[in-house]
Length: 77
Image (tube, rainbow, N blue to C red; front, side):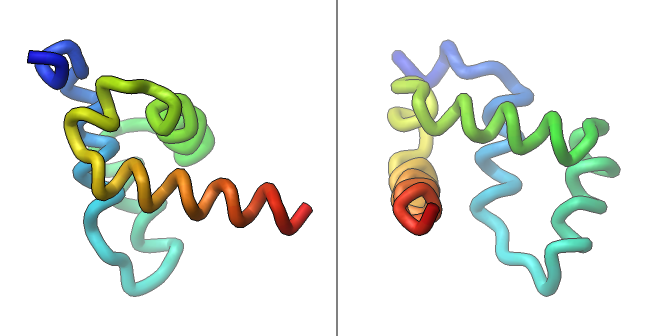
């Protein structure tokens, strides 16, 4: 199965992205406390996951939503 190739950390990043947050600060706090990484590293890993077919196979709804957001932000520049 394709999604089995996705590591624990990658699955945890996608799970964190599925959640809704009351404020940006709450999300960054969760990244530090739950994943034990700096927010900058988190967003680097997340951005790489959006281009990873294993991530798409694991959570297509989240990955496609985030790809749309990324495309929209790039178009604004």
